[in-house]
Length: 189
Image 1 (cartoon, rainbow, N blue to C red):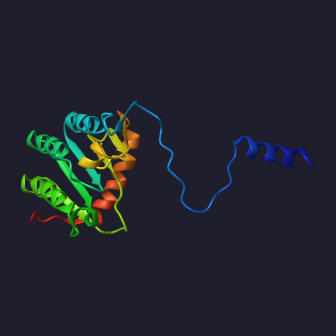
Image 2: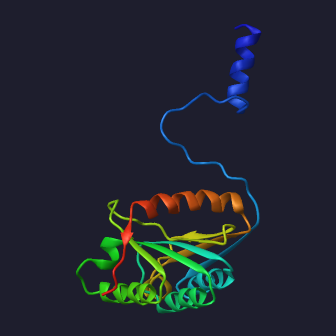
Image 3: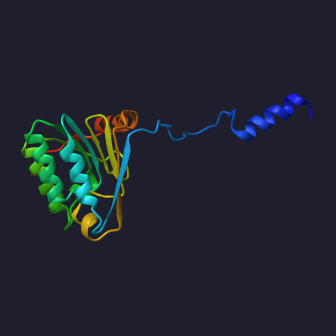
């Protein structure tokens, strides 16, 4: 083996050079800010979500699969009342289809929309399974925690907040905007 071939193989092995790949890979984002984590049930998941909402000064973008948590609705309404622009894209099937649990979701989304919050629903995918808050273009909350009573009291869930990471927030805002464009305005019932 020539020295040139050996160096190329060595660099590939050590990760100094990468070959182009096909398909879609994850997006690298600079690590920044601080992390905070909570778990549920009884581990502070809902409390941390509300802490993130309460920290908002200018805007909150929400992507939600299930939306039945009265405390989270109250926190979003309080943010809206103090002048924070709140926009929500919720999964249509999970929240509006006929069924027993959906009356709570319908009531929650209606309360927000009736207060003037920008509420939209999406059926663009089999499930809009995101659980994300993007706050003031710098903070991101994500994890398995649905914005529901069950997430706080019955399910094993996790909440992860990356405080003060505008690069990560920009990636999530792009994802939010794509979902927002595919959604439709929610009409309260």
